[in-house]
Length: 259
Ligand SMILES: [Zn+2]
Ligand SMILES: [Zn+2]
Ligand SMILES: [Zn+2]
Ligand SMILES: [Zn+2]
Ligand SMILES: [Zn+2]
Image 1: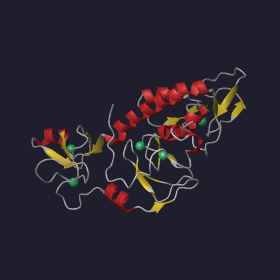
Image 2: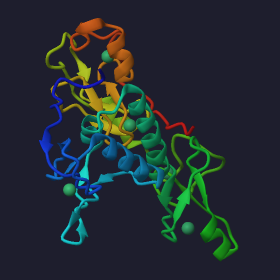
Image 3: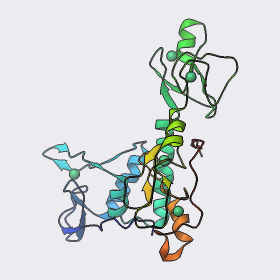
Image 4: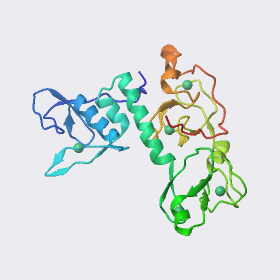
């Protein structure tokens, strides 16, 4: 239901299960690396990867004593594991949480290169605990320009270093407008910040629904609603129209909220 019309259907083959080694005579789904497995085994394996904090899915099949390790996209897993709507939602929430911690909350300290976690997501002024304890003098840097913090107080927009600016906002303000193919939607910004995690995405697909490569949530490029809500509201005509008007150029980058 939340699948774009470009999505191919799973390919089933008569083969043994390359993940469990079982040869029970049942049809298996074929993955892009050529290995085959049972959809239930696939979803259990991928869920265990997420539980361990992995953000990418890989193939565990044995190839002459080594693991295949081919990477599978979430879209491929979602399709081949035949996830139900509810399972998809759970998967996506879990992916978003893991990715949030990975991409959003950590940056390298420009001084000691260790990973620093940002606790206040709207504050660019960040203290490196490692530097500060080594030097007995606090070291603070700017989350945006990654230079030592300059200025009094805190800010969510910029510090006082030259050139500290939010490049993502400039890209959003200046990107080209385009008509979305196969729809009545005209003059849509060609670059959007993912409404869930803020990652910039350029519209390249034939479909107005785009899966964010960072948080894996599928959203509508035109109205910026979650794909499920955009589709739910316009019956079969959801590729042509949206439930809501075209969202204007974004002037803020959504900040990932941790649950
Ligand atoms: Zn494989
Ligand atoms: Zn440091
Ligand atoms: Zn700065
Ligand atoms: Zn995202
Ligand atoms: Zn929409």
